[in-house]
Amino acid sequence: MFKDRLSKALEIVKVAGKIAQERQQSIGLIEDKTGPMDVVTDIDRGTQDLILKTLEKDFPEDITWGEESGYPLSDFSSTWVLDPIDGTTNYIHGLPLYSISLAYYYQGVPVIGVIDSPSFGETFYSERGSGAYLNENPIHLSEVKDLRRSLLSTGFPHEQNRCDIIIPVYHHLLCRSQALRAIGSAALGIAYVACGRFEAYFQLGVSFYDVAAGVCMLEEVGGKVQQINEKPWGTSSRSIVALNPLIGQQLFDELNRFQIPEPVYS
Ligand code: IPD
Ligand code: CA
Ligand code: CA
Ligand code: CA
Image (cartoon, rainbow, N blue to C red):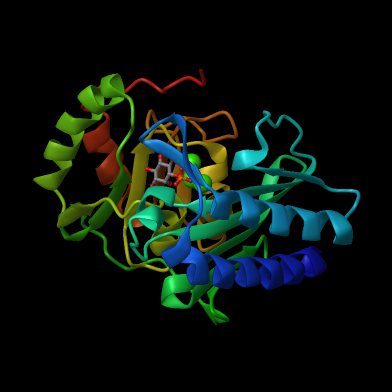
């Protein structure tokens, strides 16, 4: 049903990914948004511009929006949601772990997800009802059934009060899983759950545009997405637990030992 959109999305995201990769050693402008922990580069803006303009030309009836648009998004009826570089901090430090993450929402549901990881030559994608793929090969969740053998992944919140809440949870889970990683790109973290590299990704203080493409992909392979308080995940959620259902109950049993409030948008 969304084949044309998926193939255009794949084409333009890969082009933008190549440009981002080539420019990583020669970033022009790096500016603080809310502070030094939250920066934007000319490459974030250029990538967003290229991708959204291309989509607007091909699908003029669709809404297009990106992290750097500078205004809120409320209409998810037929809407492209872009995170032009997910992992900007990694990107400016020359690390290969960053991605370009594009989702298309139809009637409030993410039905296309594309996550391109140019440094590794990996493009993850999904269309609702048609499976999820990595470079054209179908991907699957892992078969790990035991939290103790699970590789968990997270992203650190920027706000001090959220760190105070989540750090004891990290300590608790470190002692009950195989290991815990923070790779610096929420989108890639979820794609890695979808292809079986991680068993779960969880984070406090994440936004819909960080994870929408990953949500589509993960649900397509039978994964589950919830808020950290176990309520359903949606576009206004500020936390996420994206997981392999085989370890879902075990992980939530541990998370539920803590009172973790769902952050609110400020
Ligand atoms: C960030 C990354 C990071 C996550 C942060 C996000 P950005 O996105 O996904 O892994 O921990 O919460 O803001 O700003 O690099 O697009
Ligand atoms: Ca950002
Ligand atoms: Ca992001
Ligand atoms: Ca970003």
